[in-house]
Image 1: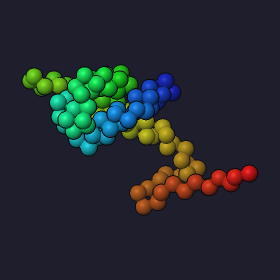
Image 2: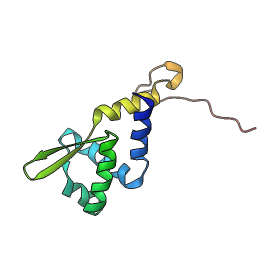
Image 3: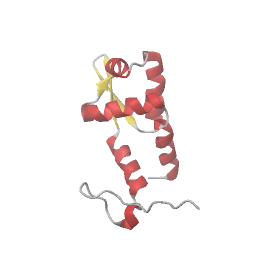
Image 4: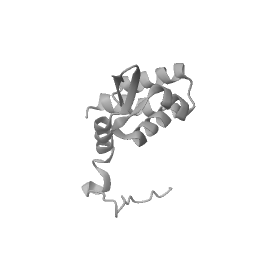
Length: 111
């Protein structure tokens, strides 16, 4: 993933409402959620929700599709996984982290 795309994705999530929306969409899975349900579940006014979804869409963090009269939004799992891979690619001195072994990093020593 290019640095420019990484910065766009991180910027899109670096806001409380957008992070909450994204986490909600991740929980919903690939099926996604209609905008009205996202608004209700996140407690965000529809006009504000539209703004936040547009920002995340421009960063390729969410996708949308029309189903009848509803717009269904989903987390873009490919972008999410690429972002996570980028952030952790040099973790643990190149030794892959597993669910049974978390990354252990040396604690910093204050001078």
